Length: 56
Image 1 (cartoon, rainbow, N blue to C red):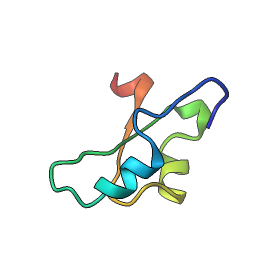
Image 2: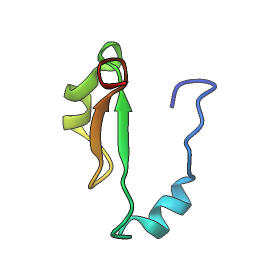
Image 3: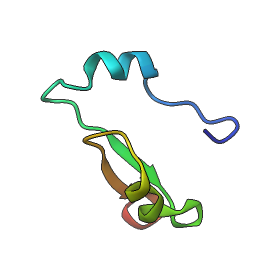
């Protein structure tokens, strides 16, 4: 994780709730960090990709 950045939830919380049917996991990346290519190479199962700079 980039220095100074914190997740909205902890890995433990996510592990406990990963199968919750109402949970939506957004994988927010920007093109300079690799964008969708990096997402496709590995992400949290069930995560949805979004490009913050493009999609807002």
